[in-house]
Length: 336
Image (cartoon, rainbow, N blue to C red; front, side, top):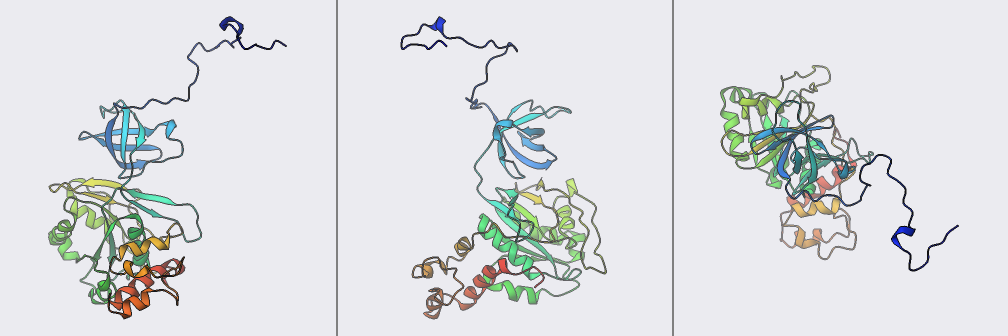
């Protein structure tokens, strides 16, 4: 077998012929500096609808992105045919850095994390005051996911004509969460939509709630020019609604430049992915008191320095109670 010396000539190197006649593969990927910027509006079986320069473009993820998936709200870079005409397809070659992420798992034992929405400014948690009954544990879980993902929470209570909001407001009053109370009559005449729209001005807002609370009805009232789905009914036996929204969809508000992202109704909101040490970041009045906490303190144990911090008058005891209630949410089921 011939061995090449130190000073081999170019003709001495044998190369295998390329039978296909094309260029050999390379690991150097193009930078796509001329790629267009877009926003993902919805995802359906591998096809992504994006907004590019005011028009909707159908696209698919480029192979070079590997397992990285784009979700509704993502800012992406696209190349290819971006005319938006029928039967055309562009490629998403880059997913830009996300400013916030709403994530959930199917349940608390599921290690698989699902990104629901990216780059939302706030999370509107929609709950009915009756028919079906409110589920505070599910609300708590949504709050934890919002605080962990960098979203500001907004509580939207529907069907106030069936039950008063006082009990629920008392439960969440110490968290200083902005809220809106609506009734069926106000949804029909447009008053409720106007009050909710004031909270959405210029923001990207993801709507979440379990089935039957009137989430899609509210979204239809906010974006009448693009009604999403027919609305469903609540089962009289189970007290739960039928899913009428099957995929997340971003819809533009007509005047103020904001966006509404309608998400499918949830019946559970797993928090297996949540780092409980990040939840304290949503309580700036309590966070300074953690300086003297023991290493690895969960902020819900006997040696936690927050007890002394609150006893000295630095913060409201009700705020500490609210924090610990949220921290315990991971260990409780929604119906507990």
